[in-house]
Length: 175
Image 1: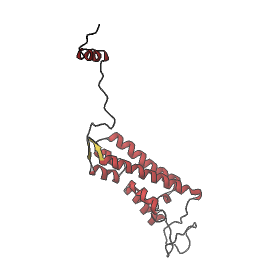
Image 2: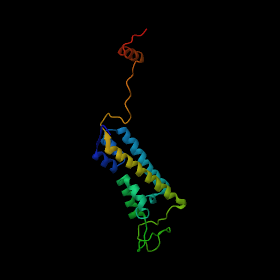
Image 3: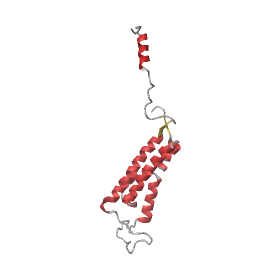
Image 4: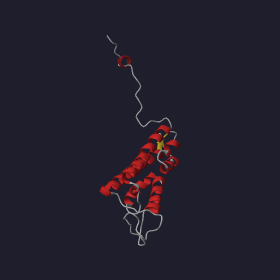
Protein backbone atom coordinates (compact mmCIF):
# COMPACT_ATOMS: atom_id res chain seq x y z
CA UNK A 1 0.00 0.00 0.00
CA UNK A 2 2.99 2.28 0.29
CA UNK A 3 3.10 4.84 -2.52
CA UNK A 4 -0.57 4.40 -3.38
CA UNK A 5 -3.16 7.13 -3.15
CA UNK A 6 -6.87 7.36 -3.75
CA UNK A 7 -7.79 8.68 -7.22
CA UNK A 8 -11.60 9.20 -7.30
CA UNK A 9 -11.60 11.07 -10.63
CA UNK A 10 -9.78 8.22 -12.38
CA UNK A 11 -12.22 5.70 -10.88
CA UNK A 12 -15.25 7.67 -12.09
CA UNK A 13 -13.75 8.03 -15.56
CA UNK A 14 -13.03 4.28 -15.63
CA UNK A 15 -16.72 3.69 -14.89
CA UNK A 16 -17.84 6.10 -17.61
CA UNK A 17 -15.81 4.40 -20.36
CA UNK A 18 -13.53 1.39 -19.95
CA UNK A 19 -9.92 2.54 -20.20
CA UNK A 20 -10.63 6.23 -19.64
CA UNK A 21 -9.37 6.06 -16.04
CA UNK A 22 -5.92 5.10 -17.27
CA UNK A 23 -5.94 8.06 -19.66
CA UNK A 24 -6.53 10.31 -16.64
CA UNK A 25 -3.61 8.64 -14.89
CA UNK A 26 -1.36 9.21 -17.92
CA UNK A 27 -1.01 5.56 -18.94
CA UNK A 28 -2.22 5.68 -22.56
CA UNK A 29 -0.88 2.27 -23.56
CA UNK A 30 -2.72 0.51 -20.76
CA UNK A 31 -5.84 2.57 -21.51
CA UNK A 32 -5.86 1.33 -25.10
CA UNK A 33 -5.35 -2.30 -24.07
CA UNK A 34 -7.99 -2.25 -21.33
CA UNK A 35 -10.51 -0.28 -23.37
CA UNK A 36 -10.09 -2.50 -26.42
CA UNK A 37 -10.33 -5.66 -24.33
CA UNK A 38 -13.44 -4.72 -22.40
CA UNK A 39 -15.24 -3.09 -25.32
CA UNK A 40 -14.22 -6.08 -27.45
CA UNK A 41 -15.87 -8.44 -24.96
CA UNK A 42 -19.04 -6.35 -25.07
CA UNK A 43 -19.01 -6.35 -28.88
CA UNK A 44 -18.34 -10.09 -28.92
CA UNK A 45 -21.27 -10.70 -26.58
CA UNK A 46 -23.53 -8.66 -28.82
CA UNK A 47 -22.33 -10.47 -31.94
CA UNK A 48 -22.89 -13.88 -30.35
CA UNK A 49 -26.13 -13.30 -28.45
CA UNK A 50 -27.59 -10.24 -30.10
CA UNK A 51 -28.98 -7.21 -28.35
CA UNK A 52 -30.97 -9.52 -26.09
CA UNK A 53 -27.72 -10.24 -24.23
CA UNK A 54 -28.25 -6.99 -22.33
CA UNK A 55 -31.72 -7.03 -20.77
CA UNK A 56 -32.56 -5.34 -17.48
CA UNK A 57 -36.14 -6.64 -17.43
CA UNK A 58 -35.65 -10.35 -18.03
CA UNK A 59 -32.17 -10.80 -16.50
CA UNK A 60 -31.94 -8.23 -13.67
CA UNK A 61 -29.20 -10.01 -11.71
CA UNK A 62 -26.95 -10.36 -14.74
CA UNK A 63 -27.72 -6.78 -15.71
CA UNK A 64 -26.44 -5.72 -12.28
CA UNK A 65 -23.04 -7.15 -13.20
CA UNK A 66 -23.18 -5.88 -16.78
CA UNK A 67 -23.94 -2.31 -15.69
CA UNK A 68 -20.39 -2.13 -14.28
CA UNK A 69 -19.42 -1.39 -17.88
CA UNK A 70 -21.05 2.00 -17.42
CA UNK A 71 -23.16 4.06 -19.81
CA UNK A 72 -22.28 1.80 -22.75
CA UNK A 73 -24.42 -1.02 -21.37
CA UNK A 74 -27.09 1.34 -20.06
CA UNK A 75 -27.48 2.79 -23.56
CA UNK A 76 -27.61 -0.70 -25.10
CA UNK A 77 -30.34 -1.70 -22.66
CA UNK A 78 -32.31 1.47 -23.38
CA UNK A 79 -32.19 0.79 -27.13
CA UNK A 80 -33.16 -2.82 -26.53
CA UNK A 81 -36.09 -2.02 -24.23
CA UNK A 82 -37.53 0.89 -26.21
CA UNK A 83 -36.80 0.08 -29.84
CA UNK A 84 -36.46 -3.68 -30.29
CA UNK A 85 -38.60 -5.41 -27.69
CA UNK A 86 -42.26 -5.92 -28.44
CA UNK A 87 -44.60 -6.19 -25.47
CA UNK A 88 -48.36 -6.38 -25.29
CA UNK A 89 -50.65 -4.22 -23.15
CA UNK A 90 -50.09 -6.42 -20.06
CA UNK A 91 -46.32 -6.12 -20.36
CA UNK A 92 -45.79 -9.71 -21.54
CA UNK A 93 -43.21 -10.22 -24.25
CA UNK A 94 -44.58 -11.04 -27.67
CA UNK A 95 -42.26 -13.40 -29.51
CA UNK A 96 -43.66 -14.35 -32.91
CA UNK A 97 -42.17 -12.88 -36.05
CA UNK A 98 -43.45 -10.79 -37.78
CA UNK A 99 -45.02 -8.48 -35.23
CA UNK A 100 -48.59 -9.49 -34.44
CA UNK A 101 -51.55 -7.37 -35.55
CA UNK A 102 -52.11 -5.28 -32.38
CA UNK A 103 -48.43 -4.49 -31.71
CA UNK A 104 -47.38 -0.92 -31.87
CA UNK A 105 -46.45 0.23 -35.33
CA UNK A 106 -42.79 0.67 -36.14
CA UNK A 107 -41.48 -1.89 -33.65
CA UNK A 108 -40.15 -5.14 -35.11
CA UNK A 109 -41.03 -8.55 -33.74
CA UNK A 110 -38.65 -10.03 -31.21
CA UNK A 111 -37.61 -13.55 -30.33
CA UNK A 112 -34.99 -14.91 -27.91
CA UNK A 113 -32.11 -16.70 -29.54
CA UNK A 114 -32.23 -20.47 -29.83
CA UNK A 115 -29.83 -22.88 -28.12
CA UNK A 116 -28.94 -20.47 -25.32
CA UNK A 117 -26.77 -18.36 -27.61
CA UNK A 118 -28.03 -15.20 -25.92
CA UNK A 119 -26.81 -16.62 -22.60
CA UNK A 120 -23.28 -16.92 -23.99
CA UNK A 121 -23.47 -13.31 -25.12
CA UNK A 122 -24.84 -12.36 -21.71
CA UNK A 123 -21.82 -14.00 -20.07
CA UNK A 124 -19.40 -12.13 -22.33
CA UNK A 125 -20.90 -8.79 -21.33
CA UNK A 126 -20.99 -9.82 -17.66
CA UNK A 127 -17.31 -10.83 -17.74
CA UNK A 128 -16.54 -7.47 -19.31
CA UNK A 129 -18.34 -5.84 -16.36
CA UNK A 130 -16.28 -7.79 -13.85
CA UNK A 131 -13.06 -6.88 -15.64
CA UNK A 132 -14.09 -3.23 -15.66
CA UNK A 133 -14.72 -3.45 -11.91
CA UNK A 134 -11.11 -4.59 -11.50
CA UNK A 135 -9.88 -1.64 -13.57
CA UNK A 136 -12.06 0.78 -11.59
CA UNK A 137 -10.53 -0.47 -8.34
CA UNK A 138 -7.02 -0.34 -9.82
CA UNK A 139 -7.55 3.20 -11.09
CA UNK A 140 -9.00 4.29 -7.73
CA UNK A 141 -5.92 3.17 -5.77
CA UNK A 142 -3.19 3.82 -8.27
CA UNK A 143 0.42 4.40 -7.30
CA UNK A 144 2.32 7.57 -7.98
CA UNK A 145 3.74 8.01 -11.48
CA UNK A 146 6.90 5.94 -11.82
CA UNK A 147 5.97 3.51 -9.05
CA UNK A 148 5.90 -0.12 -10.03
CA UNK A 149 3.77 -2.90 -8.64
CA UNK A 150 6.69 -5.33 -8.71
CA UNK A 151 9.37 -5.35 -6.03
CA UNK A 152 12.45 -3.31 -6.82
CA UNK A 153 15.54 -5.10 -8.04
CA UNK A 154 18.32 -5.64 -5.58
CA UNK A 155 21.50 -3.81 -6.42
CA UNK A 156 24.29 -5.92 -7.85
CA UNK A 157 26.91 -6.78 -5.28
CA UNK A 158 30.43 -7.88 -6.05
CA UNK A 159 30.58 -10.99 -3.90
CA UNK A 160 34.38 -11.13 -3.79
CA UNK A 161 34.59 -7.59 -2.46
CA UNK A 162 31.73 -8.26 -0.02
CA UNK A 163 33.54 -11.35 1.33
CA UNK A 164 36.77 -9.39 1.80
CA UNK A 165 34.90 -6.74 3.81
CA UNK A 166 33.37 -9.38 6.07
CA UNK A 167 36.76 -10.98 6.68
CA UNK A 168 38.34 -7.64 7.62
CA UNK A 169 35.49 -6.87 10.03
CA UNK A 170 36.01 -10.14 11.80
CA UNK A 171 39.65 -9.25 12.40
CA UNK A 172 40.96 -12.08 10.29
CA UNK A 173 43.25 -11.58 7.36
CA UNK A 174 43.05 -13.82 4.35
CA UNK A 175 45.97 -16.18 4.00
